[in-house]
Length: 377
Image (cartoon, rainbow, N blue to C red):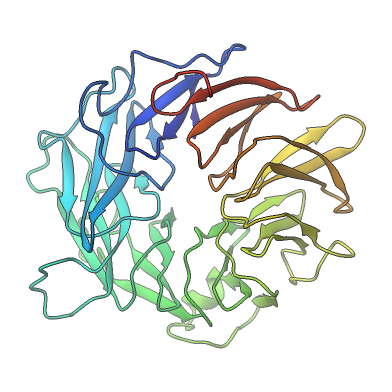
């Protein structure tokens, strides 16, 4: 994630670090959590979230079937923990990123080990109080029948997310502090055809997300709020698009076009109002598309999409036609989302390399190990 003067990275061995946005792309060796020399947290799969002078994230590590997740808040100033307990721990997994709304931190879990709750939930949406002096860390939690691997998003006081049982949920945040009477109450739900792991996108009154039944959906918020609770039928202003691959990546919308990739390497350009394909044929990536694409500007061509491949390299497609353009050589798979800052593109590979590229000529500006800052091997 880019915030202020830095790119923040969740290293796969369990440390949050950052890289300067300056021309040289230098690693900030004085900042990180846990601090250098201390034990790491376990793999961090989700993107760090920066809110003002706070960085939030989650990790989990397993010994066989025994898993422990940790959610944390640290200072952007020196990387020190902001909570007295350092991290909030649960015997579960947290696969997606956290979401932050004011002083409320939200994240999804799998089932909780040793859980005494009679609901026998397959997963939960948790809401934590982010304030350092919180009298209790958990504000509320919402049970689901399936594990929650995706990342929740918040819009107009509502938390939106999907679960592995194929249910897409809209749950009340509970006001700015997460404490109103309707906090954690389901407002409506939609039953999709397969498991939902993608972080949804909200734009122009619609929610966009895909599932593991090869289907991509556009749900109209007004339609759902007016009586679509629990429905599997699409209503006014809603549509679905069928592909031949599962959807994991969060879609991107730009200049009236919706772009989204699948786990079988197809990359589509769709009309956000109808779901109709905008390209004669989809783009094709060798490998899975797990992370989100990034919009880049090509001199003389307009916009293009930089699409990460879980197998190797970053593929690039013309935004208007879908034609393949010169890509970026990573020499390793990329399952993290690609981020752009002006003339530069940042890539985090599955080998834990953080690479900075010059967009204009595709040249590599720098490459460091995401946890230590050492030059790439």
